Image 1: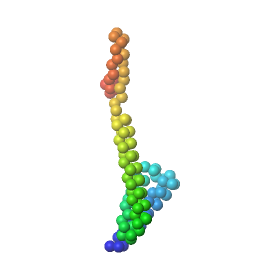
Image 2: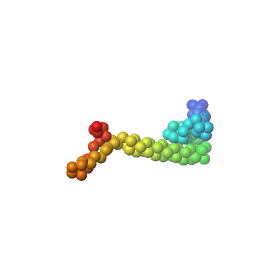
Image 3: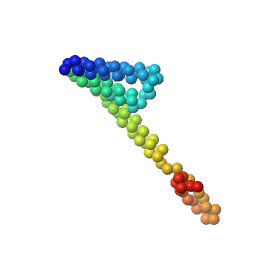
Image 4: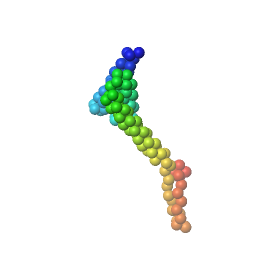
Length: 111
């Protein structure tokens, strides 16, 4: 079982270093994917650190986990806001010449 936790720790290390390398080289954008890899790596390090009693590593990776979690939540909220704005229907305003009144209709219904 100890070998399993060592593999978890090394996998987390490889994931975090790989993500950092990919962002640094421009192969990966620093978005949700990058943060998700950091989240996974932090979890792996927390598990490994707890089993080895490496408390500085555990505390550091709890902070890393929280930072990545908050970043993902903020990016998703921003995506939802952007999707709602782009999903709003386009409207056009028309002014009638005889009465001077305005009429607003969705663009899909415009000729």
